Image 1 (tube, rainbow, N blue to C red):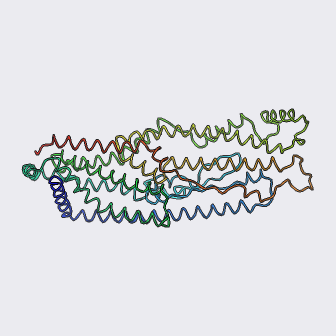
Image 2 (image 1 turned 60 degrees about the horizontal axis):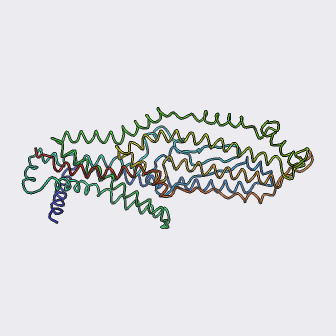
Image 3 (image 1 turned 45 degrees about the vertical axis):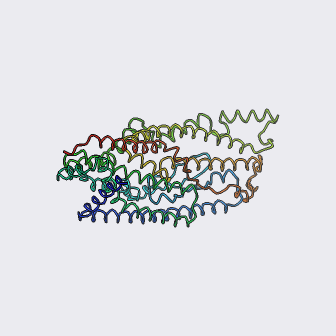
Length: 483
């Protein structure tokens, strides 16, 4: 109890001394205003994007159902849209969402990518990033911590009060923990209100109806950001304690901040992209088309591959014309063509994703030496605004597209006659009631366990940093000198 009492007294004294500097009030108010702006901006962006997605998803569904009697293969080409709704935590962490599209046009025989990203409709200023609550917590608050804590111990050494403190029975361990608690108490004046506002917004967005999965994500979001900020509190005190002067401590801490939050993230991305170059979109699509043509063109009746299928069907059914088949031949061929083109696309996509995974592996590996990258990756994962979430949306949309196309092909096989109508005959169609057999697309975000599995490196690295800092405090307490 005496030890704890001493640390609390040190923390309280440090907090009081911090607020004697009027600049702290200005900086705190500025960051507080940024947090409020970020909360409002996130709220407005979330509401706007989801209302737009819901509106056009509903209109797309209505357009699909309003189609008249038609050949099902024409319906497959008419297509549909898949929209990606934002999750509630994306209000606080925009992540890569502004740069990834949130809508995909789904049609037979063709896999489209997501479009209508915010970056596509914005000017070049978006490349500098948007102000989100996560950005303030991950980038600006650590800078505030360093500004508050750079002279936490160094000033005591410069003033000669460090010797007095240590001679009065205070040991280095108490002093270090006291200063850490003092810095943390200052930062919590911003962090705690932010979390309260964050939770209130989060509850309102879900109409006070929350799932267990979203609750766990929110708790992890708060908990890991708290640990992340405490990490910088410890770093600030350790650097200050090991520096001869406050000036050296400030320069060192600013250098650390620049390396962790700006230099390393951008450098690792550049190195990954350089070592593992991904093909352009044009080359990617061209390679797919070439492989599909090697397999055959399902729309060409004289294609070698599909002519072989035709000949085998005629032999099996012992007939001399596809018009005599008990099912629609064209629909059968379209089913085979869709299967082949989808398999080829998925193979090329997996190869492309492997390249991107190798690129991203650099950033993930650096999590072990940079807690900022670890926190950023985990934060984006929990808010469903990371790269993996975007790919998951693409895969869900492709699965829906394939099932839609094959469902239409199946209807053609079952209901459309092989006999071509005459010039005055009614076109071969099926009843429009069948369009309702295709369920509406609904995007399902990754669960918290899927997020933790994909971001296990980030979680482990953050936990290892905690252990390392505790060890460093113990070492510092034994080796630091008052002079």
